Image (cartoon, rainbow, N blue to C red; front, top):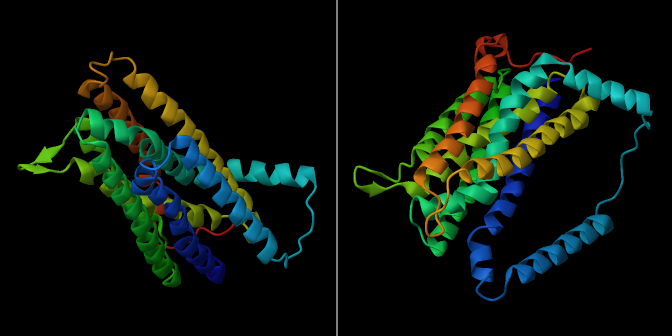
Length: 294
């Protein structure tokens, strides 16, 4: 089990930062590309690049592993076991909410906030998103490496998960308050990169939850977590917009109160979801892993 847990966190450390490349290219590179083409050209280029990568994977990556084909009853029974395990919800719910907020804000709502509240230009917003994407990559590498070290020492990454997620609430709260300057310094563009960096600690949820299940269920566990993340991302993308739209725009800009309410609700939802986990034995205990469920 120890070797398997180290392998899981090791894969996380290597693979998850690659996800940040997508966020990286969606910032300043897109802004530069839009000077040469329109959004249709950008999407066409992304489509061709995706097809190229898929073709290379199909051509170069061999099928070397064979596994027994599960029956449909076995498949659904495994999913039932995942969703019926309390630790899945203790960790995956705040994880899903935190990453849902991150993806909704990074992909859609931080740019309007930077424009309407902080007053940044489109070029400055692109630079801020670039720094945020870099914060994502650095955070994934750092927290993944720390988790890997803790696992090798027989200790859990649960406290690191909780610490990073809770620290992310501070810059998210500052965004919700509309705090754009401090002691005379412009800090608006630093807030979301800081939140992004700390939120990457929540990615440890993959390894933490998987450690409570047999190795052959790791794929099912991670897929279930991803289902929550994608679902919450959709809900927050729509929900933040629905709340902001309650205030009429003035000269194409929404008022500070609209963003305060929308982002403030996001902070409260994540904080409330963290409370059961912070008070659970999984955080109070000093041992690393809970062991697979039978």
